[in-house]
Length: 159
Image (cartoon, rainbow, N blue to C red):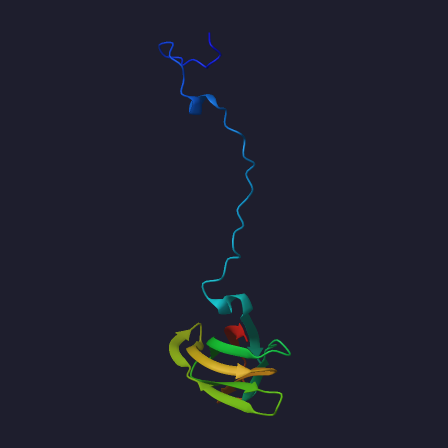
């Protein structure tokens, strides 16, 4: 033997590059960039809903709690209003700014029929409305003597 490593096959010497043992390389985890959301607004998402009993009245206000000190961008509103069969309802969204500006948005309720003696109205609106402090809805009805229900959901993002 001449001190050179031998191949396992046929007794020939292994090439020098195979004879050298591979040094262990410490694996360090690769730094992954912070994932960015597909939609940058998703990181500042806003979603709030209210399910309320409508007391006997022509008008019932349903207030929301937008984030204080930031501007809220309302992008989508959906609502269901149920009142006794034969009655109608209307829906209006109010927004307000700290400088006194206000917005009033009429949202169309579409009759869906009568279920369990209740007229069902639904609204689904893609909107772009802004507020930095006040967000409320008004359900207006044509009979101040009966009760009903309303479910309103608002989504958007803070900017």
